[in-house]
Image (cartoon, rainbow, N blue to C red; front, side, top):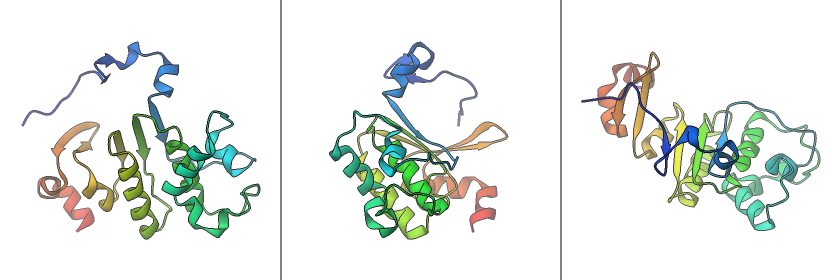
Length: 178
């Protein structure tokens, strides 16, 4: 098996360094691990003040990230009482609202209860089935849903394949999760 140890990243056959940064913002949505909120409303925290989003965009983001399922979000002007899991849901809504072609999610479900995480992940996959989603995760339920897994060890790709192959091929993974 030949694993890549160098190369370049292309988006639609264009080298990523040749795409202007503003162009990347219209293609890629991200959700990284940091947990912060602005001292502002729920919608402002989701849109970061971008006024181009419609009620439908917000409705979509609320639905996928389960913000509409919890009474805790009824007072959308005071977010000081939210748990870290609730804050993660807001960050997921922020990543989802632009409906970009590529979605990068770094540990998206940490601090979110398992049942909600599974539901949110199913909604993300369903709503984005024609898009590229890159998960950076150790969540088994997420890994099982991925088409292709890349496993990094010591900064190098040591495995490429599906979840079942992954379980059999990576002893360190089996030791941790089974």
